[in-house]
Amino acid sequence: MASQKIARQGEELWKTKIEKVNAELVTLTYGTVVAQLCRDFSTNNNPDYVEVNRQLDKMGYNIGLRLIEDFLAKSSANSSTQACGSFREVAEMISKVGFKIFLNVTPSVTGWSADGKSFGLVLEENPLADFVELPDDGRSQDELWYSNILCGIIRGALEMVQMQTEVKFTSDVLRGNDTTEMRITLLRYIEDEMPPDDE
Image (cartoon, rainbow, N blue to C red):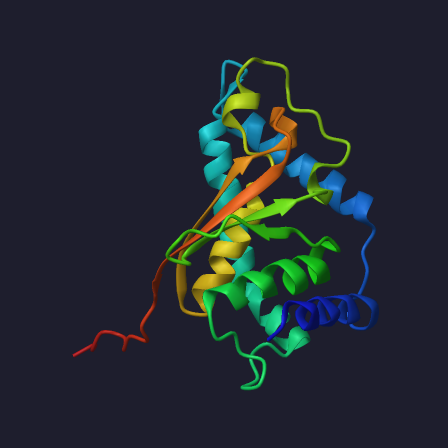
């Protein structure tokens, strides 16, 4: 499936099939969740940002497990004519359809590894990070991945379509980097397994 065709599909879905929600509401609600996690996982007013990252990833993973059904229904990506034939096509679908229909942004797919099992997604704009400044505590810029829920969402969604992946941020403008980039690495294709026999 050609990259331009996928991009047109994402744009068309955004215009016709997606119920819109106020972006500022989503941004502020997400900010409240992150702030609450920082308070919940804090000792003596020192947030455990590593645990906050873990919790955001876990929340995202659970969302991704369910969100994939909505994505497949809206995008028709599960039909035999639309199925992704390679990990490169998966990357294009995530970038040009998934991000477009759920966040109305289209990150760039970059930095493919030589074996074709790893790529980067560069977000020119991150709607979750609008109006956000990380705490000036000397640690958050080094430890907190503010939008880490996105990593969990992608990981959970891909697991539901038989791909075990590692998804992590490698840079974030909130941390002072020039770009916001995620790295997605295919670890393995999950084989259909029969549940263990109860006998």
